[in-house]
Length: 167
Image: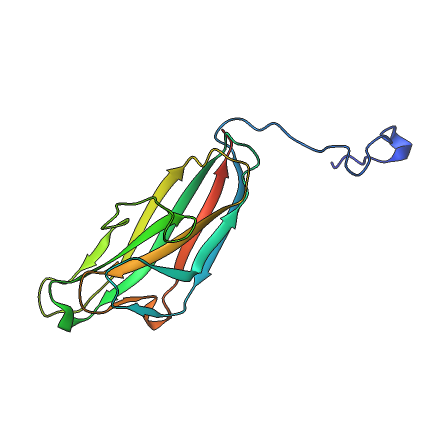
């Protein structure tokens, strides 16, 4: 049976804004922000290039909060690019900011070893400690070491998710 709370049952001091904060235990998810795209992008750049549709901003509620990032980017490398790879990475800030993955390989690569085209997801996660309560921007970027690399080919979905974790 449901309990009815109203002024007639004696609970009349609950007002809008009366409950302003809640202390959740360390490790609790406080907020989630997601960026998603199906827009195909190509590059021949050997330096990381921003995937502008996979950039997001999250504002931690405390300097002790952590930001847990989850990335999935579908990649394709053509058959004519034998010996090439395409990699994805996450940067705090812009592409010239802090690299959160390996500076060359990011969070993984799709590598072509023969004359066959390769399509696969590059996925990874990272627990960031920005040590600030200011807005943080996270930028996904990709690069190739030769040939042409593709992301979100044939409208495949790429996703970057940021979760604030209570510290």
